[in-house]
Amino acid sequence: MTLLTPEALQRLARRQQCPLCTGQKTMDAALCRRCRTKLPTHMRSNLEGIQRRDPSSVERALRQAALYIDVHFSSVRRFGGGKKR
Ligand SMILES: [Zn+2]
Image (cartoon, rainbow, N blue to C red; front, side):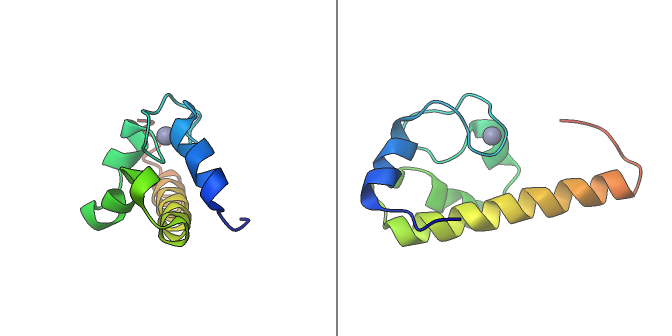
C-alpha cells in the first residue's frame, strides 16, 4: 500500500465506496459500516472521523483492518463455515 498523503486521505473520506468490500460507506469514514462492525473497537475508532486524523495512523489502521478481515474470513472458509455476511 502506498503512503497515505493528506490529499489521499481527504479523497478517501469523501468517496462513497468502501475500499475493502466495495459497499457504500459514509462520509468521513475510511470503511463502510459493515466492515467496521467486523473490527474490534480499538481498530474501528481510527477509521472514523478520518478527516481530522493523522494520515499515517489512518493508513496503519486501514492496513490492520484489511489484514484482520482477510484473516478472519479466510479462516472461516478454511473451517468450512462458509457463511457469507
Ligand atoms: Zn466495506
